[in-house]
Amino acid sequence: MVRKNRRHLKVVAAIVSVAFIAAACSSDKKTPAATGSGSGSSAAPASAPKGPPGALAGMKGTTPLVDLPADYKAKLDAQGLDLKGVYNYGAESYDAVTIIALAAEVNQVTRGGSKCTTFKDCDALIKKGTTDIDYDGSSGPLEFSGNGEPTVASYGIQQFNASDKIDDAKTTFKTAKAPAEADVAEVPVEGTRAGDGTLKIGTLLPETGSLAFLGPPERAGVRLAVKDINDAGGVLGKPVEVSEGDSGDTSTDIASKTIDRELGESVDAVVGAASSGVTLTVIDKIVNAGVAMFSPANTSKKLSTYPDKGLYFRDAPSDILQGQVLGDFIASEGVNNLAIIDRNDAYGTGLTEDLTKSFTGSGGKVVATITYDQNAQTFDSEVSQLKDAGAEGIVIIGFAESARILALMVQKGIGPANVHVYGVDGNMGNTLGSDFEAGIISK
Image (tube, rainbow, N blue to C red):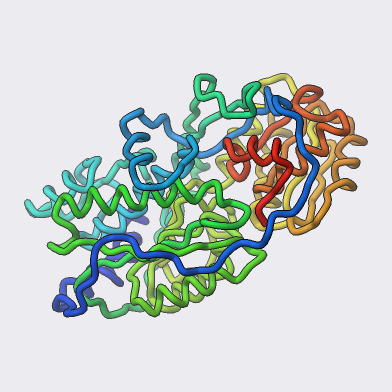
């Protein structure tokens, strides 16, 4: 996928391309359409305090996001899923599939070669004999480091309006670059596996659980990419196949069951998970099977150095970048002291570390860091600690449980109407407003 590409290439190329070129077409014909997930369901919603309508107005936050044109959003909307106006990680999912497909055909994909911006155009270059291409996709320039992650990323700084929805007109965009030391040497690929001549991709994306609001745009991105690739002639002359699967969250074993099924179906690569925590529960199973794993949304720094056999990639940036962008933005708003409430997992504590470094580097002070159990039934104690901290600004680093935390904050007089409140990619979205007003959370 990059010079890492080379790794990328080697990644998917080693496990997909080489096998494809060497193997005859399978006689087991399968349609190139997505199959059902069959992965289980979520638990029943838990009751929670309701938030008064309009109480999120003014809350701001960051998420990896590019300024998607209206026609691209319309294409995502046309993939048979209800996106509810949420497009987070849709472009990253699209690019993940496209990079996997290109890597099945050539050994240099996203760095230092001939520029191209669509699968069709890149494929045309490859068919003319180009062996080193540089795919710049829907989600940005896609310059990868040797550990399989981007070193440049675009972030959207979003704001809720009086209807508890993201006000798109007020979204601004900022490009961030990882520090030079993040551009590490490529990680060699370990192992090979046989293929059957057809590229088959499994998805591990949240249809249920605490990140379910990200599932529709991510799944739409995958479907749109597969459509565009197959409309352009497919990979090595054959349509790409997809087997869709639910990731659930870390409170269930849905992800493990999905991966067992997809590995049994001989997928060549897995797109997902959205949650870094979920990825960490199944990454060993996937890479030990010689299958590539490509997440459109993982941001935990822990995955930057994970022993992944050179088979794990992501086009969502590390939280080193989000922490930098959010910390600088909060400081620019004149906030001098900050309290952080974060979930107790690799995502929550890792992003807190980078946010703290950025904010204090800008001259601010973090007066309280409160870590919670994301599976807890109540957050009264943690929110009371937030109130006692008396901070000018509060950052909530969480997933869907953020709605319950916010409802309690509003009750205790520390909501967006009283102090500066900020969110992150795990909770910024229209679903947060819906859950906040309804007083429920999907477990």
